[in-house]
Image (cartoon, rainbow, N blue to C red; front, side, top):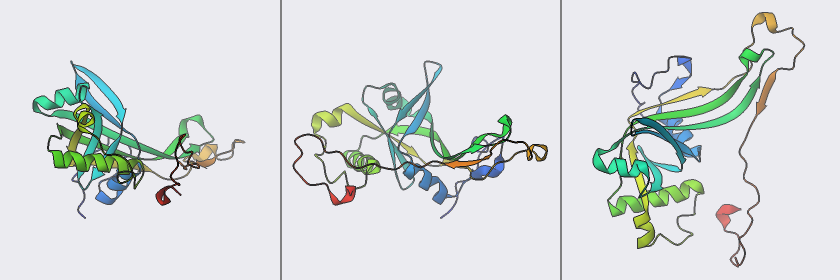
Length: 211
């Protein structure tokens, strides 16, 4: 699986050793993240919106409303965007204030997004977005009707100019601070699903994919 080629925009100016361009790392981060941030320019001003996303091969689909700013702008000639996702894996607590940090995995994807108009592709994107929330949901809910399809839009961004950045390590205190009387170390963080709580009037048993 070939790596994404680095570009001036996907090459970090700091901590270049943390950059990753292999598809496996990039795809794993995108697939694990539940929320992305969509950045674009509207009327000369930067806008960043949180939304849901899903990856299908080398295409990133981004959920939105038909009447939203990015969807309207993308219909003209495509929309230059910067899409980011971040996973925080741990807090890094150092002896010195300066060296506190996070262990994280992030992805930045740049390019021109397009509105998905093809009905078959839009259906695939909807299924991917549902299964990204929880694998199995696309087949276990009512599909969108014509009114809902008309009100919902999907942006597609080809993953071409993309990179990941990963920090995975311990404390990086200065040598002269190692004997200071302060606790230092790593506090792992995880996102763990709780027990599903059924909505009222639900009579069907809990699906196997949610157990």
